[in-house]
Image (cartoon, rainbow, N blue to C red):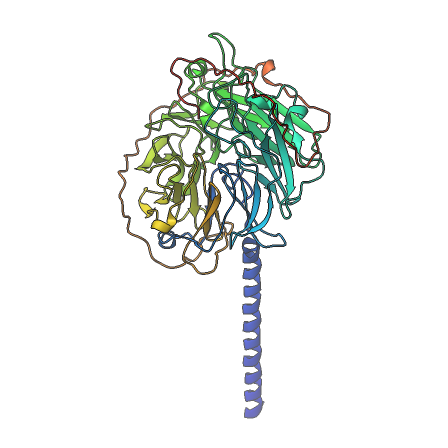
Length: 592
């Protein structure tokens, strides 16, 4: 038998060993947890319009619990000074040598990288070229330079955008800059007129956000305000590693502009746009307008959907493509992978994005607005109540609709509030489904940000005080979220707003429900009038599924190399430019 001292020694050794094992296990758990968390906190980037290729405008940021969002304030120490009018959303890029950057572009053809914390200039390009003093139809955008939101390829650290350069005639150039230094990448820019047969910058406008899908950058074009000249809806695709590889698609008929702020949407392999009115005669076949159009890489025409009354919409200038498409997944619905279009006819159309169906009735259709829908992008988000889409209409009304998980899916109103302005909404959520807040800006109205509960429309953020007013805001524009901040672009300035959480909070990939930061939940200051959520009884069945006409698939592939001059110089005018004559329409509604 062991004596008592030996027993005590043995027990002490066992306890010591057990304690060591516990500490090792705890350390191992910490290491595993850190390994799981670290990638989500490593880097946050907003590389494109509305954050995601689907154009859903969803931002996941744990800092934006309601209590924090209710106390959002403008960061008065953020400089943000730039030069020019701004219609494009800012971008947020990390990983560069000078710290996190906010990228901003203006109609003066100026490009800026601002430090994301201070708003001071890291680099700028003010030598891209003189913008056109006005557009072909003397529209509202003046001057015309960089309108659409750029896109960034993180692998190559490249920024892409489309700029109009003044000349006789004006020219569209697609640029690629090093996002860390602002220098023009080799073999860029691409002179679109030279690279794409039939393309005429004189009558083509570029409004929508650029898309980057599998190594190709896609740019969508419309006409100018007033339907001047023989413009078409165009989608141009450029190989980012070989910019001499340019492909394009255009509507067969004149018109068919791609007007929406979101531009090209993608599911990761295929691209989607929505086109506007074409100029057709009664009995003409469908030729590209009033449609959701799907492309494979290139772009190569793949499929389309158009409503059965597309020609009536043409005749009334009721563009289906006044707003850009949003791709929405609704688990439990059949079909569940959808694409949303909002028309100037005030209807929402839901389509099976894997089976568009040609000229036919949609999967679901509903009159969703009290006023015209045009120019903007919608947002999509999920809450415990279901899958929503939200939009801002012409009269400043913000609405949110639920897509019911039925077969086929149906649409029902969740809530609506009166909110001035014409911005495109965006959404914050703390983990992908919880604490959804729908944000809009009072552009060309009160100049304030407004935040609403994503489930019921109750006010979360009411605009703040005098310091939170923004000046020079422009229609269609939208905000961007990164690390506990909202950034918004306006004339001559990028504004930064922050939640009261101390250090910036990273934006995680949704891997579960995070621990809330604080517990305050504001009492709504305004109670909207929710509308009952009837489930529409319409269950449309496609009736016609024609094969797309062969002439609807032009895919010119120019072989020549684009202009490689990094800073095109404007050609001085000796005489004023000739102007296309606007098309005559009886009392036409204004363009999107």
